[in-house]
Image (cartoon, rainbow, N blue to C red; front, top):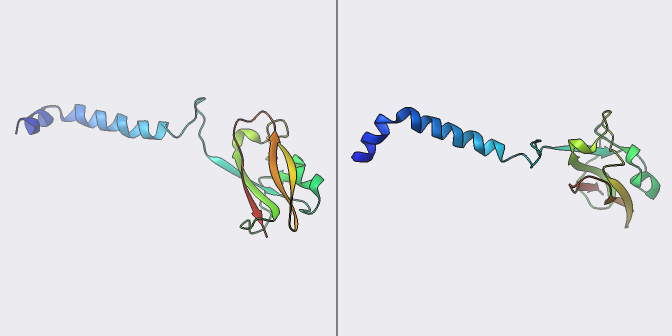
Length: 126
């Protein structure tokens, strides 16, 4: 009974505390620098059976390629940080450097260097 009386007397303080806790949950979805952690999907535009094209950052952009990226044999798309792109939406080769890994029917990308601290999530196609 005493708890209910205290809550009634301090209703605005309880609401303010709940609001602060609620907004703090959204703050956790940012990294140490304060930028949101929302990834950007970029797509491969080239020949997946040519390792130089798979490794070339100029062939990766935020323009969809019309492929179903749900396999494991050919380069298709990847999720990267928005910071890893150039202003025109292409993969920035200074942030993420790629190599081409052989697969049964072509090549898939793999991050081999660059200044980005994040690892891209790679999606391939059949």
